[in-house]
Image (cartoon, rainbow, N blue to C red; front, side, top):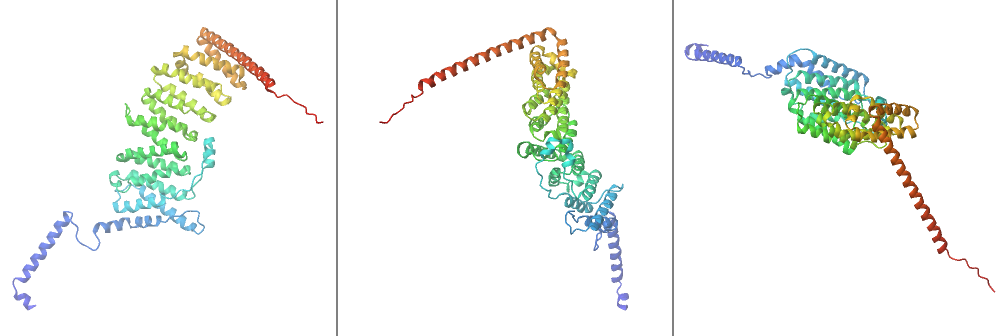
Length: 464
C-alpha cells in the first residue's frame, strides 16, 4: 500500500485511462458497435424473444409418413399442435422476423413439403369423367400436417419483404414447389396454387423464370407424357397472369398462345382442364381480337375424330370465340367454322349433334354466317337435309326442323337454289353409281368367259 501511495504517477494514469476507456466504449456502443461478450446482444435478444418459436420449428422438422405402423399417433398430434402454434405466431401483427428465424423456418417448410410423391397410374377414368375427379383422386394421408404447413408458407410469403426472402425462397425452392403440382390430392394442389400465385405476384424478379418453368411442364405434358395432375391449377394461375397483360401483347405472349395453349387442346386429358384452358384462350382473343383466326385454325387442327366428349367442349369454345372475334374477320372464318359445325350436326352421337344445332341460337354466330351467305348456305343446307332424311334421333330431327325454318326465312330463294344443287349432286352421284355397276357387270361377264376359255378339258382314261 505504501508503494502505491508514494508513486504519484501510477494511480492518476491508471484512473484516467480507465475512465477514458469506459467513455470510448460508451461512445462506440451508442454508435452501433457491439461490446464483446460470450453471446452477442442480438443473439441473446433472439433467444429471449424467439426461443420458444425456435424450439417449435425444430420440433416440426420431424417427418411422419402416416403409413408406417411404428409411428406414434400421439406424436403426430403433438406435431400438428406445434404447427398450429407456429401458424398462430405468424398471423399476429408484429415486427418483421429476423433472418435467424427465417432460415430454420424455410428449412422446416422444405423438409415437410418437398417429399417423393407416390407413382401415378394413367388416369383414363378421369379423362372420360372429369366431374368425378374427386372420386378417383388419391388423398394424401399426411394432409393434416401439410395443410398447416402450406398455410404457414403462405403467411411467410405475405408478411416478409420479398427482397429479404429472396435468399431463402430461391429458384431451386420454386422448382421443387412446382413439382408438387403432380400430387394427386386436389386439396394440396388447391393450396399450392394459391401459394405459387402469391409468390408470382410479390416476387416480380422471379416472374420470367416461373412462366418458363410452367411452360416446360405444359410442353412435357402435351408432347411426351400426357400424365400430370396439376395442369388445371397451373392454367388457373396463367388465367390470372394473362388478365394482367398489357395491350398490345408482347411477341413472347403470342408465342405462348400458339405453341403452348393451342396444342393443349389435343391431349387425351383435355376435358379435365378444358374450362381453365378455354378461359386463357378467350382472354387472349378479348385483348387482341385479331388473334381469333389463329385460335380457330389451331382448334380445328386438333379437332378429335372419335372423342364425342371433346367435340362438345370444343363446340362450346368455338361459340365463345365467335362472340369475341373481330367482326372484320367474320368473312375469313365463317366458312371454316360453319363447315365444322355442319359436320358435327351430322354426328351420329346425339349430344354432339344437338350441341351443334344449338349454336344456331347464338346471334353472333348467325351474324357471322350471314356475312358469307353464298359460301356457307350450301354446306349448311346439305347437312340439314341429310339430318332430316337419315338421322336416327327424333330430338335431333326436331331441332333440325327448327334450324331449317330459321335458315329458310333468312333467304328463301338461296335455300331453294341450294336444294336444286343438292338434287343435281344426288342425280350425278346416282348416274355414277349406275355406271359403276355397269362396269362391274361387264368385268364379271368378261371374267366368266375367260374362266370357261381357260378351263382345262376333263379326260377319261380307260385301261385295257
